[in-house]
Length: 309
View (cartoon, rainbow, N blue to C red):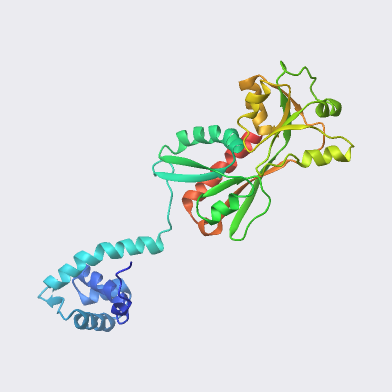
């Protein structure tokens, strides 16, 4: 609970404190007036108000200057650092030095986005920002806006398209799909034909447990259907499963290259028209002026575009 008593400040002109500081520094009403771009009578009037406010002479005139009283010295010792801090707070915009600052970012994303983007992002942070830590918060297209509104993440890498109230979205890039399989389990040519695609069972990722996707809609338009044998909200288990059974998995193309290398999988373009995934950055409007967040957003844009090439 704040201990500030608002009524104590009702009759105080904070400009008087500036006069007090300048008088102490200059030791003269006339020189203080010049520094403050005020007339000498105005500074003399301000000093009279200060004396009444603090019930102290504050400055005593000598042959060469005005000497502060002990009360004035105590006030200056306490006020000077506070006024410098206030000046910096009010008039110097916040800055972020990635090379030297310590900071923790909370980034919301799904597991496939993490696999796709985080190795490159962490490599960039290791070089550019050694004091930056990252916490990944699991989310999905149905919950990334909610996480931001609840201040559980600073930014989300979103594959959704709706922008909830109070949030900002930057569509950075788009990603196609690819179909993968283990050539030891399925001897199939690449690119896949539609007949081969529907002849074999499939694994599917669904954040809500649905065994149907937009691909199935496109297949139905062509009078075809596929059997979805396995549904999971996670991508990470899929390459391990298709290493053990004859099945196809259709995933964002950003995973395809790494999975082909790591698991020696075969890959093909999807033999039906599928809309590319929009990959966006989503953040809250109230954080739009945060220099640390703006630095992270710029780095994420760069890494996402490079990873999409």
